[in-house]
Image (cartoon, rainbow, N blue to C red; front, top):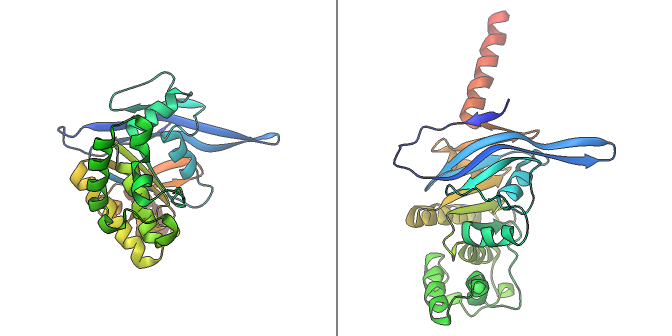
Amino acid sequence: MGIEIEIEIEMKQKTLLSVNHLTKTYQQGKKQQPAISDVCFNVYENEFLAIMGTSGSGKSTLLHILGMIDSPDKGTITIQNQLEPFMFEEPHATAFRAEQIGFVFQAFHLLKDLTVEENIALPLILKGESEKIIKEKVKKQLERVGLSSWGTYFPGQLSGGQQQRVAIGRALITEPPVVLADEPTGNLDYNTSLEILELLSELKTTKGQSIILVTHDPLVARPAMLIALCFFMMDGLLMNILLLLMLMTWIGLLKSSKK
């Protein structure tokens, strides 16, 4: 039986992403190792959702499947009510990602020989947008991420926090409805991490995009925890963290009553 997470949302809110019974198993020698097991949840418009878990819990595998980098053994993903039969196969996966998904990674993945402007513009260039539109959108994006005066610099001339801002600008330049962030503050110090989380929250609010953030750090998950949209992942299973806390409290009370 799948673990389904249902969160009370006003009917006006739009479902951006629906995950249904995702399962992924890897072969390790003669054994099959489940990475995620029958995972179900919905993501609504303008939400900040965090998935917490230790290394090996399955959270990165889940994120890779959501971004069509990997494919599930079973289950489906619907984005904006679209269920594409070949969404995990190339070239369909690449086309679908370009339109629907933005990525922010721990390691930034900036091209060192391109300027800040060129790195942010890259998704638009690959889409074949006109030079005029690219210049206009990149200028606005630089303002949004607080790098207006850094457009002509190269990644190697920037701090870690600035590089992550560039990566966020690149991820959001095509205005994808869903943004996937994999340990986005993993290489940053405490204060810079707070700045990046604040930036993500601001951009979510102004553009109406939904953010799915994967982390092992409760600090990073805090913006989602404050609005009860934080899941905990363990051994490939996903659970609403509030339900998990309620379950742990119930178990504690039950043990106390038996003493």
